[in-house]
Amino acid sequence: MTVACLEPHGFCMGVKAAIDKAYHALSVFGKLYCLHPLVHNEQVVATLAAKGLRVVSTLNDIPAGGCVLLSAHGVSPQLRAELEARKLHVVDATCPFVQRAHRAVAAFAARRVPVVVVGNAEHAEVKGFVGEATCMQAPITVISTAAEVAALPYEGWSPVGVVCQTTLAAEMLDPILEQLQARYPLLETVPASEACTATRQRQQAVKDFVAQGGDGVLVLGSRTSSNTAQLAACAQAAGARFVACVATPDEVRALDFGGVGRLGVTAGASTPEELFRDAVAVLHAASREI
Image (cartoon, rainbow, N blue to C red; front, side, top):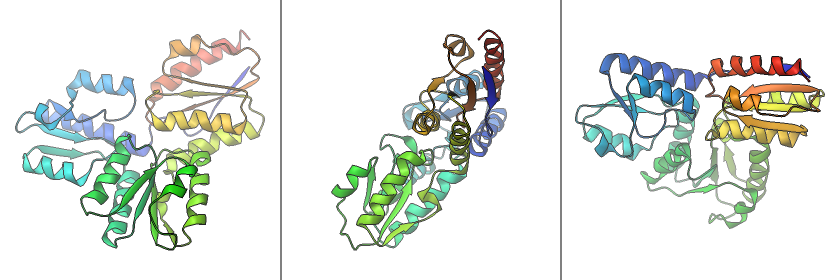
C-alpha cells in the first residue's frame, strides 16, 4: 500500500487565527470562557482547557468582568448585544468566511429580501445566520436538502438570497442551488453561497486523488466536525472503495487496510498537524506490512 498526503492539511486560516486569539487572551486574562467549543476538535479543546479555557452553557456561568471568546463559528447579534450589556470582555474569533456570510445575510435582510440558508439548523454557525436576520425582523429559512426547496414559503418570482454553511460538500450544496435557481429565477447568489476556500480545496484534493486511481481515503478529524464528515462523504461520492474517518492514531492502527493499493490521507480544517504526522507515521509502518 502506498500512502499519499493530500494537500492542504493542518489548521485552516480561520481555525489557526481562533486558536492564536485564544492563547493570547489566556496570557492576558488567565481564564477564558466560550459558550461552545472554540473549534470542533476534542484534542484542541482539551489542550486549551488545560490552559484555562472553560466551555460554558449560558452567560450566567461567566463571572462579572470575565473574558468571553466568540468561537470560529460566530454568534448572533442578539448575543453580542447581551455580552455588551453585561460589560464582559469579548474576544472575537469568528472565521472571516463566517463573517462574510453574516454580512450577506444582513445585506439581504436590509433590503427585505428573504434569505435561504443551506445547512444544518442545529449547527452553531447556522444559528448565528438565523439570528442575524431575526434581529432585523426579516424572513429567513434553513434547508438541508433539495427536496425542501418546493416547500419554501416565498413566491416564485420574488428575489431570494442564499447563503450556506461554510463547511458543506459540493455534492450536497450543488443540487440544492440548482433547485433554488429553477424555482426562483431572481435568486441572488453571493460568495457566501459557496463553501469556504479551505473546504473546497480539501474536497477537490480528495476528488482529484480518487479520479487519478486512489482507491482509499482516510480522513483525520473529530466526528463532531462538519467539514471532516463532509470530506468522508466527498470521498464516498467520488467512488473511493475504502473510506474511514478517525480521530486518533490508535484508531488508525485498528483499521484493516487489506486490499487498499493507494491510500490518500486528508484532514478536517480543525485537525492538529501533530495528529496528521502521527497518523501518517502509523500508516507508513502499516504499509510495509501489507
